[in-house]
Every structure is written in C-alpha cells, then in structure tokens.
Length: 172
Image (cartoon, rainbow, N blue to C red; front, side):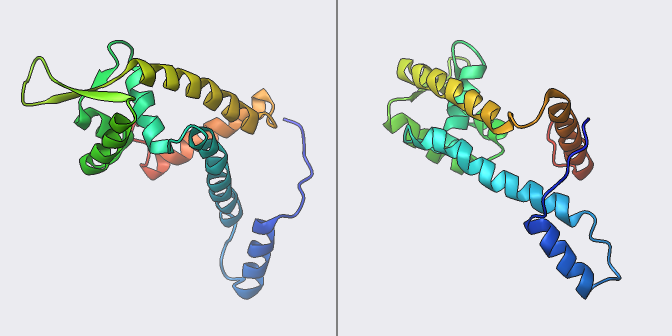
C-alpha cells in the first residue's frame, strides 16, 4: 500500500480537543470510529437517493432484493423476510403493505401451509428490482472507486473483523 498524507479533518479536531481536556485517556479509537460513522451516514444518504428516485426507501428495496436474489419463484414468508432484513414482523408487514399497494409484490396462500402466506414479486416488482440493483451496484462502485483494489480489500477485511469482534455480524 502506498503512503498517503492525510489532511486534518473533523475527527482530528475533536480528538485534539479531547486530548487537551483529558490527557489521561487514550483517544486512538475515536477518530477512526467517528470517520466510519460519518461514512455510514453520508454514504447511506447517497445510496438512499437511488431508491428515492423510484419512490422507495432502503427498507422497501431490501424486501424486493431479498425476494429477487432468492431466484424464481421470488417468494418468501413474511417471517423469512423479517429475519433476512433484521426487522420486526410488524415493520415487515408495513413494508409489504406499501409494496403491495404499488403492485410490486403480492401475497398468496402458502401451498404447504394454508395458515401461512407467501410474499412474491410481481412482474413489475422483478422489473423494478432489476433496474434498481443495476443502479445500486453502479452507485456503490462509484462510492468506493477512490480506493485501489488492495485498499478496498484491506478496508473490507477491517470492517469484517470489527463486526465479528462486536458480535453484530449475524452471519458469524
């Protein structure tokens, strides 16, 4: 990796002020975590714009994406969707209601268990999801294009390691 000279930023200023006020504490972690939080905030806004342009929020897109990436017949139970999206069943019901009102998903009786429902993409839901995923992937690539492949791999590795250490990685 090449050496880079960094410009002083908002996190450097805050850490410097804290070090003057509390020299007894180690503020080494504060800068990187503040930058990561800001990246999540601003990066999230840039990602959300792609979906907002089509009248969706990120949660609604995530429902469509979970259904689409599972392959045909593009159906899951509301409970499976809630688990995949780490949301409550009540929150998932609201998302499904909004998507159904737009004609992007439909509810059907589960053939194996008539007490249960399946949520599936409509033809319009598949079309819109395919359009949005192409825009989303291009947008994410654009956001990370400033990193060379080695930096991107190191960044990904560091984030994976942090998530695993905090126990916030449900796949771990």
